Length: 78
Image (cartoon, rainbow, N blue to C red; front, side, top):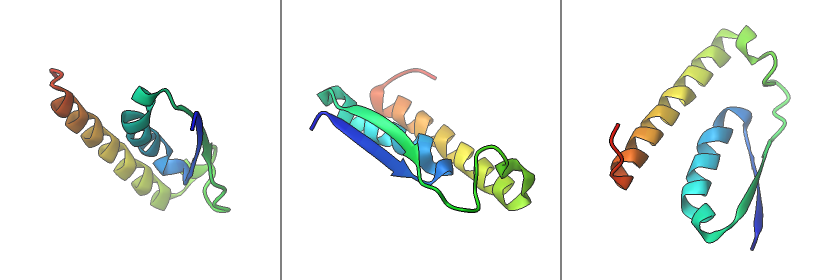
């Protein structure tokens, strides 16, 4: 396997990529990101909805925690 297409909901895409990259990039696997069409959610107008504001903020916090945990795991200073 040389190339993987990651398909996930738009707001989970970065965290999914970070997870897969941590595990598989050291093996030389290339990743192509593509978000799944949700019908309701679109990256251009998602910030018009209060519910999506909350969802995006929540995902940002998860990404921050993910990166902090990864730094700790790798022994990188913050």
